[in-house]
Length: 537
Image (cartoon, rainbow, N blue to C red):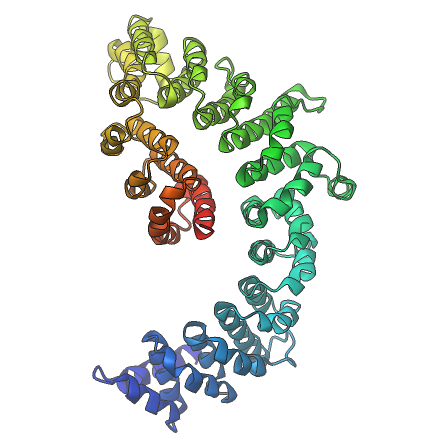
């Protein structure tokens, strides 16, 4: 019967809709005696985004047959003038019943909450807070999200309670953490720091929590530093009660401190580079120690703390596959720090060890080293070409690189290193000349493009911003990461700010279009933070 009724309504809607109908004719149909025609008029006005009709649509909130549709339309059409009628339309008597009337009332309340959130008026906060305590989950989700949109500071205790509620659904916790970040009140810091490390039903809340703390910014630095140094008794007691491992806490606080970039964090992060986890199992201890060290290195790299470069260099090793992640993170951090003397040490480490790690280290050296390293790279490639055919074939298979003819294995392996001389040759040609680096953002070699992005960012080249914004949308993740990092560096250059404001909508559109694409998650987390910085210029 439900499907038949829906089909009948669809048929009526189509018959009532005439291509030539004007906005005024749809407004007139809001007074039609037939409720179905009135529904279609509301839908069409919403579709046409006729915001000047918002007050007429809001008046229909008093019509039981139109209430839900009107609330839905006001999500797009409503403004501050519609807040009062929306608040008055909330049904405060409905419970969590499963009958048709209760479900409809809760659904309509959720539509109203969404509309109030989209309008963003703080005076809707108290009503939304009441709805956030509802027993209907759909309504709670809508209200919790709306509380963030209206920046309702009075909701911080309730949202914090949701985060710490072991029985709360993961999606509701995510929404609460996002809203706490949007509200931006330092009172939310305890809940957000809990969110860094908790899991519910196998779901992590690190992205939402770390972003919320980044939004709060400077006010979060001291609390994070205390947690990182075991100086917050309340947090330590909570972590022990909830069985949260110290390594996870240290790693994730390091991540956020790197995002915020306050120099007070540098000594604490440097100390974490030598963290040794006390777990009695040697393998587990190594894993947890590396976790903390790599996040500390990453944070120092984001902060471009060149004074920490030697300590970060000490983490780079090509000897064991267990060190793959920490070596990758540390090598990337050295690129960002830009101490070119460190590139020579990376090249020395690229001479021996596991092929995958050697290539990681060599590529990092190619992305910021002096041009003279190009000769070392070519000599390394020549040495590989003269290696054992069997050894070359085995190493390439470990890299999952197909080799049709084993006799070509060593030449193919040599090519992997030889290609890395290209960005070093580009550095010889361009040196510190930004106009020379700019066209290299379109070079066919992705490592050259990435190096060009880093060099332009380091040079403070404001005229490169449009090209860097384009590179930040590339499919090649190496180039994306470099361009995003370069744009981030340029936010500190006063002359670059007008151009950065121009590209902000472009980056926002890119983020919206790529939402849910897993291949871009890591680099787009950096892009989200960049977007926040651009909004503050």
